[in-house]
Length: 242
Ligand SMILES: [Zn+2]
Image (cartoon, rainbow, N blue to C red; front, top):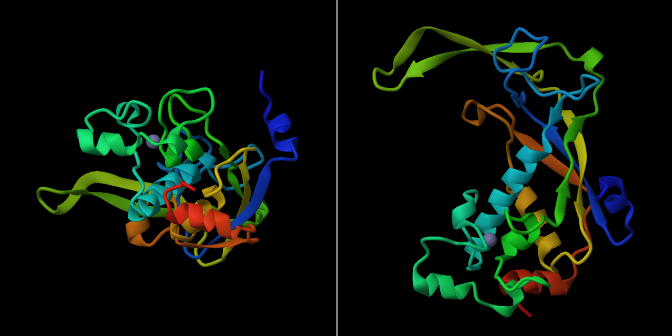
């Protein structure tokens, strides 16, 4: 069995500490939480601290890295549907499918090709080489009041508010610059371009959580710079190749 703490105590693992500073109120809901009046309550740790789930951050980070990689003309599969992701890549036109058949898209012990995003974030056939933590609010929950925002469901066809469809969203308090801290860990033998791409991807995440269009969850990042060497930036520019 693999234990997370063994993986993380491996000295070959590289870790970056990241902090999201929330400018507006944050709304990261979990279905079915109890102990609050909100219909869409915010997620908390067992000791009631607010948190941004790792799965959400990792999903957004993958999405931003995919966009950047496509911008750099790397062949990248279509997530999150398993069929259209590596190594299957169903429904791809033949000329695009051939782009994936490069030596650097092979991983040791596997005959199939995995695009550079899958080599970092994994897919149903390949383990992720990035471990993302939950980001946990540094503020004592005792000091944070529960904030509920009323909302209404809009009927798209009629363009009016639906009757009896008032709901409450729980958010973090607005404009108090709450800090959410966590870490990202890179497993040994991560690809050379991974650090450069993750840093660039983080910079593209300007907001997290629900109701972003109504101005919730806007944030800034604070992190100690990972040393990224020239080779890594070059690998990023050239699709991971040498
Ligand atoms: Zn892929």
